[in-house]
Image (cartoon, one colour):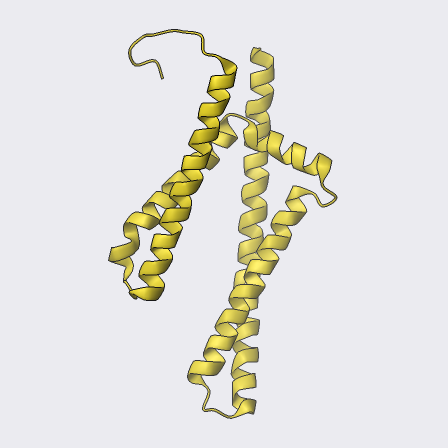
Length: 170
């Protein structure tokens, strides 16, 4: 952003160190917001109005980073670098993370319903767990896998296009 019209050459070493500091500050802010969110939820049992600031900061910064990484072509390059050095492709890791998250959510809801709503008998608890686990699995698993796989495919395609345009411009 050239707000004041100053054009100067910067030392690459200084620029790299500044970017490293910015990255560390970003990580620190995300960690502090996450800790604040967890403390407010778990310790103080706060409601949504008390944690909305942390949610906005976490959501907006994540969306901004993702959008900028895609529009600059960095996302595609990161995926290519990951795929070249890893045995498991990034797209498969996305599907596996969706699968893991879906199973974790289903287990949480199944265990929670067995503890809270069953009458204390093991057979009733097992039945409640099984029913809620299977229904949650049927709901969340396709949703999470689909969202992660589709968003990765769209982001990778847009980022590849931006990366290719950047190579053509130079």
